[in-house]
Image 1 (cartoon, one colour):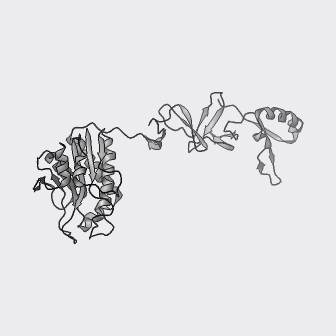
Image 2 (tube, rainbow, N blue to C red):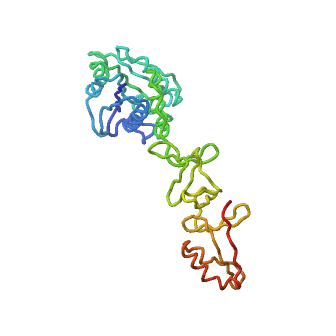
Image 3 (cartoon, rainbow, N blue to C red):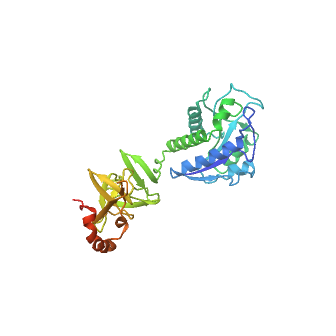
Length: 331
């Protein structure tokens, strides 16, 4: 399916008398880009009438740009004169007089009524001019065979509505709902789920999703920043437990899931030492105290396995003067 969407005005046009921050042209530009985004998630091909928000194009030519499309929509907000009117508040779809857009027009107007919560009910209108449709964009769309409508997203002369439409979150919600309305009306398939990326807390634990596939890391290590994490077969982060590497080396995963490095760890009432690369230290550690009796970190902890062997020979004669403890391999 192919749809043409028109942002009703360009530049800074139709400032709200109820809230000077609001311009119809800026709202419709945001809205039509979001509509495009969400419709594309349903597999719809969407074209827009202009690429530049500052550029003006003729009314008829904007409608005629919809040649080959199944629908033409021109986004707007309405006005009651040039002053504030907080009583009038309803959405309307001005549909081409041939009636081909009446059904989707009413569905979209009712969508706006539901999302904004307008005071008056949604409606559709037809306006005839000397040469067919009164509105140039609808004449252009009809001329190329496209069902067309102008969607008035309520009134920017209403203070409450203008302020509601100024909130980006509301504009996003409205665009998403309008795209869904179109998808339901034309019986389009459901949108593909967004690919998850990064850390997601779910099912009582944490998973890390790869943005290129949308799948979680499973049965593998993953380096996030400077920290390594291990994920089990279900993609859940492992914490407070041991993991062996492919070479049989033991590593400990802390309470936050990160591999512990250069620290002491108490696990099941036993004391373990993790080296700077995260591997569990195995061998002899000679412990010494300072003049106050507090244990000092031994230099041997930082030695490689090869240097540890030579260090043991050098310290063998001094063992009688030092209290030495042995670390057990994990069973």
